[in-house]
Length: 148
Image 1: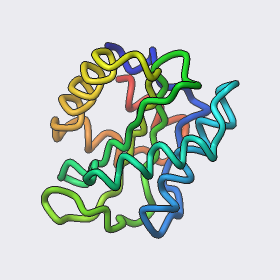
Image 2: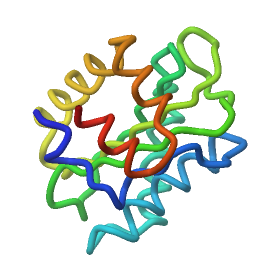
Image 3: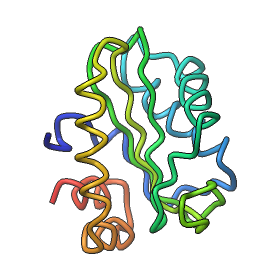
Image 4: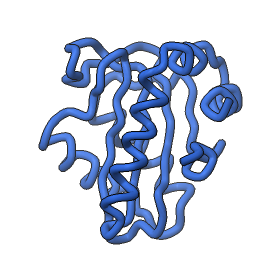
């Protein structure tokens, strides 16, 4: 899976001024909802929040991959945000998060959803990849860094 298949420039935000987990989920939902026809930001917030209640999607190393499957989703869709300041996210390592990648999948795409999550986790486990994202200073630079 290539990130270019699920991420666009318009769904990429660099150094967003977000101060808590719920605001981060809302920002990701708004990026996707504003860019993808048929995906409503409120439904996205509900889905992402419901998944977070099952357990944090904070992986560690400052990374979170909030995700959910929705009936209204037609394809795998992603959004990427880096934060100006890290926020508490109940991550596995108890460290704050400053890079978030939201993944939305169609309700009937369980295996593709899991495969994509595994691929994303692999990317984000690489220190060089995380450093490239953190070094980006604009939305365009962040998008380019994610695809490099």
